[in-house]
Length: 324
Image (cartoon, rainbow, N blue to C red; front, top):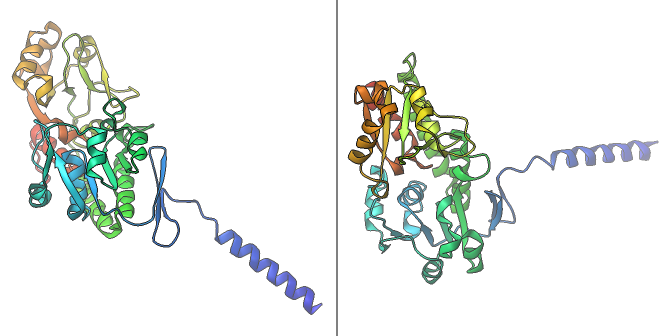
């Protein structure tokens, strides 16, 4: 009987241990000793150790890497004509980086540079230019893409939080990631508090287009920013972050404010205002009649560490509130 009771106790212990040993796997998780496995936009990658050389493909990615403590591992930066300045906290490290080109780098050029990791917005992994994720992996280069344009889009701050936490795991700087997440969340909370009780203003976000406006209309970063700043887009319900709407759709909503996205290859802000004021439908809206225009840089609408700053900017520009 003693042996039987002992056997039962051992079996019970095995069941308990087995039950405790199989929790749900997080998005980024330790693998073998010192390695990390991350699932990013459908691509699962195991990093045996933190990458020592990194290429970040635009200013948003560069400043994020710097803020996560990996500035000394960046091999340089590519510069486009419309690149804005980085956030102030990243400016010194940003300015020390070698400029690798004046346009998006080709896959062959990236392979020649030999980074272990490429970080970029999803649209920069371009197959036609030889730098899709599969093509870069063919050169032995791992990739990480911000997930705004993955299936499901930008669901909210938790999307950025996951990306920053995953990058912190990859880079071996999880504490920096947690501190950054906490700071960004605190700034969003502060804006939310300052705007408490403020009436949302119907806002049209004009990217480009004459026959029909290209505008945020689905689950994307700018739609999130707009809602946080109590300047919600008059166009919604789309499946992608940006859609082409009709002028009738926009005018029917009688926008009170128009936010014009500013970047060189879409026409100047002055040109866009002329288009708006020459359109009979838009000319009858409160925003155009009162010329309530706000200018917003395109890079301020990308997923990354700028999101709380953009909310603060719109809160001040649209409502006269200063969360900072």
